[in-house]
Figure 1 (cartoon, helix red, strand yellow):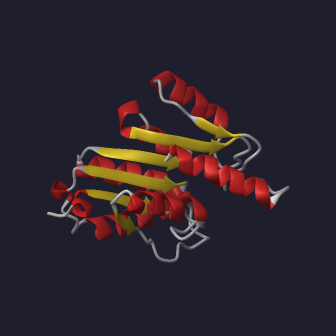
Figure 2 (figure 1 turned 135 degrees about the vertical axis):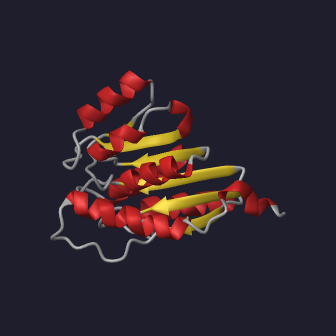
Length: 180
């Protein structure tokens, strides 16, 4: 078996954040350069009118369909990189698979906390200091209690971007990709 078949990274998008957008694109790109197979998950169009719990159920079902035919036993290394709603989906799929999976959680939401328990399973958790979707202080307290390192991007929101200066966002993206 070729080396590239022994590692896989699966990208779990957010509700409005696709796997082609910078945070997930560069996660896939960085790991592809290390010989990982890249599998982007697509949920289809998620109705903006649906509640968060409905969106999560749809996303979990769609992701489950897409990973069911993956033979995880052939992979020595499995990484899940996820953004926002995708962090819940990645945590859920991880528990369903019962495999040794490492996580990159980008802007997790409150429903993700149940999956953030073991520091050995986590490559990085990254959140914006100004995240309006999930209280950064709640995540800080949870990570502190579990002994898990949390990376907080000063001045950034849920998109892990600032809106004052585009060049600042390139610097932020560089720092985040270095954490992967």
